[in-house]
Length: 383
Image (tube, rainbow, N blue to C red; front, side, top):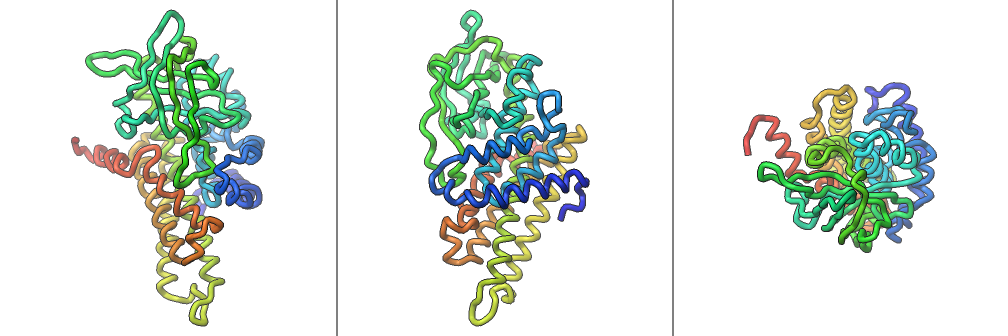
């Protein structure tokens, strides 16, 4: 199933799978039930170097690439999507914007703790009126002397309210040019007066993941907290989302695989009408389709990651990977729940949690419809 991996990548896959099975899985049910992000697990992920995988060693990273990050996220997604998305968002949305667009001073100041898992950061993009249409951003930031004054709100922001959250990077309208909004990205430290992390959401799934709405009411930060060039925020966040879609596809592949593994084990042990469920042809066909989805999803995200790491264009392939893998996770979760019958409707069984968790994989970091739009435009179709 992993014939295209190097020896080093195989070792990483084995290490993270063992960590997922022995550390993450045993606490998953209780963390989901209590809606609590287990900070001890986050700490251990930091100690393993997972948050620093795709970053150079000079900033405290592991010197790896996006393929390595995807391998780790897939392994975690098998057993606990909340933990997997904590890593994915911590890297793709928290640290990566600083690494990609920050000044050298910003990198030196912020990256070491993020890459070691001692701190987390959020990425404030989505608003009540600006989701897939991020150009509809209403949050504003105006210069007053040497400070940005920020007003507005964000929603569905991952890793924004944990005990170790250091800051959020927010998109804001900082002016206009040629009749279009000038959108920039600004770093806002947690604890800034006028910046409020609102109460956590009561979500359908990803219950152990930290997710909050954010409010900005005259929040002031130094002008040096601008991340990247002024007016480049829209373009920069698009490139961040392209990369993030690969990581989400890896997470979805892990979820699809977790559903398959659990279903195969259950079908072999479940006796129905005097024989193992696994001997029934309809169950075999269901499991075979689940296996095909996992295989296809993995091929898709591996291909996109290899392109990205080689410095080649990958936006279309990332969209395909997220589309295919997100649907694979949702389809496998549904089929796994059916294989498990009544037990699949119980939260104590992983497939029940995967059923609730997987739907967001068709929504977050670009809905299925957005992926289809990206693919259609790559075909030269105007819209």
